[in-house]
Length: 448
Figure (cartoon, rainbow, N blue to C red):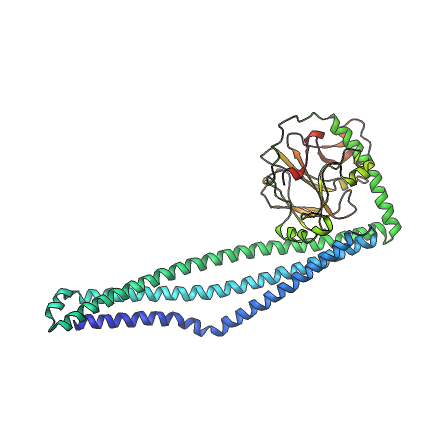
């Protein structure tokens, strides 16, 4: 009986020691953990301040978009974009630092939990060994060997206490293992977050370079003179008219795709071709634009297309335009294969798509992304939904930065030059671009 009582006391001591031992590292590191928490709070405040700066820049650009198109507003818009991108870079760096601090905090928690598990294991092992050593005298023998009833009940109570202590420690061990598993999952999530943030940072730095290059190009073209800028816009409009006429003639000569060439209209088939971050900024412009997607012109015979029939050749607008600052990541609306890429600006005087990408999708649709400043993908490359195809810009016929997003029945789209159509004599005759019969053009809003 005395042996069993000693065993209970030893086990209780070991269990208590395991709980105290698990708290020691936290106490030793309390100062460090407090410092980490303080730094995390500092980064959180800085992130809030940067988000306000970005929102203010967005508000200023929205005001500019409502003003008449001049060289001054164009340059100012690019400068605001650069300032906003610089803030986004600082924001991303702060998020990376904050995430690293949280990883450090998690590593401390994991270390504590692993020590607790190790101590719990040793406690259970020691308790089992003690039970084995005391196993030569059974509980029944101890009860019958007791001098009186009190001693007998004490023996039973001691055995019950030991079993209860072991069950408690096993439960603690199980709980600690669950906590460790959760903490390690949190670490994996934070590491994935870091990878994503690092990718964002690289893209944002490229965007900043693109915006600077665009400003330099515009100043070089115009020699910083408003009259030259307005002449450039007028010339672009005239060349655009000739291009649209030649393109329309070519597309009229192409075979019709006929009924059933494209999937039935259904919203949500395609994702919006931009990130969730950009989507949030668009929501703030809904009052000015009348929509939450930054659409500046819809598909078909819009008011602008009708008022500028000389540009659109009376056929209406064959895509939607999404206002995007120069350098905004443009993403694939659905997984698929890059059908072609090109740059109509490589042909002097051809003011059309600029830098463009076409992706064919398995559901019978194809999507076009044009006026890009840079292209990230190559013909034949497999892409996934949301993958960055390039950065937005104002190449080709664009008097302001935006994305021309088109949707086609993939059976009808071809990549060719206008010169392949007999009689095409415009400056765009030798530019490679996507073409399709008129009935292959689809309203993007039917699938977004």
